[in-house]
Amino acid sequence: MQALYDQIQVYLNMDEEISFKEFSGFYRKVLAELGEVHETLDEEMVWKSLFIVENVMSNAEGRAKQGKGSESKKYAKMAQRLELWAKNLAARLGEAGYTEEDISERFNKMLEEGTPTEAK
Image (cartoon, rainbow, N blue to C red; front, side):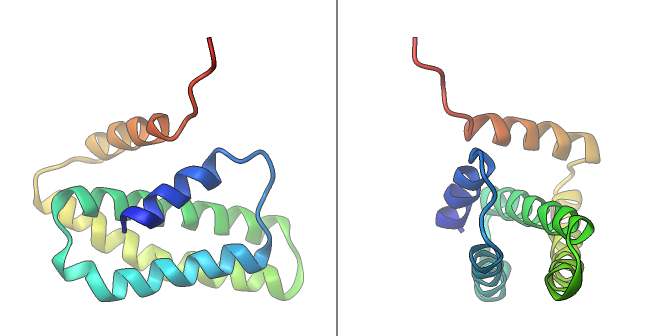
């Protein structure tokens, strides 16, 4: 999951959008990895997994609304499938005692982690 977390940070800081093919490939990697390791994730990886899922899901939703035709429908389906993972991972954090506010605060920090620092 760490490699996927590192990659989502790269994507979030890009100026241009990635292609449908690349987006779809990343989405498939996320689902495959979650399917394999979700039961063994430690708390830190649950945070990172939820961050990945939420970001891919929101991007898929945005692309579904922007586009037309089959790609738009595919993005919508990706978002739907990821919503189940988001609920699962958020529930695990809830069971560990975290609130929605905690999750939002942590996500803001995670976004900052991936922001390149300006050269001085």
